[in-house]
Length: 194
Image (cartoon, rainbow, N blue to C red; front, side, top):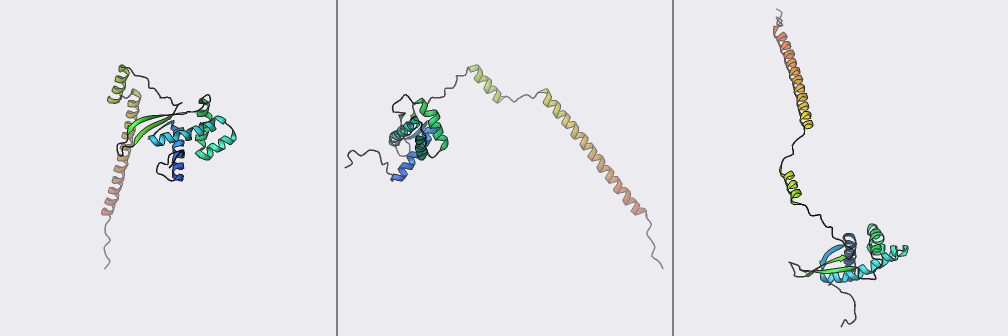
């Protein structure tokens, strides 16, 4: 019998379970909400409460204890500077767990666990006129300004000028080759001596 035995084993060895919850804890502190199974989410609550309590203490010893668990300087800094001050007046219960139905593959109950400080980013509603303008900007080709057209024309003129110079050089080379061949043909062949 397992009377008065706290915690869930989750079909994992002790070390695996601890590492899994450590990773989930870091993800929760980083993103402020994560999606997981219901049993893992409920078990994660106690881990989060302990770490946030360390964050509220704010001492060097508490920071070292938190780093020993989290193993991430950025997350420890965020815990002590951003998350814990928001929860200083609260005695516990720093998370909330939402049930989200069942997983498609194996039917496991899913949950969303989030910090109570998590605030949704609300997007401003766009008026139909703004939406229509954005759609039109994406669909219609952009018209080019006068400056861009002038730059293209100048570029074309330069290319044409360079092309003419190259043609003239080729013609000169051919003429020179033609002259040298004619000279060779005109030279009388030496008669062999008797």
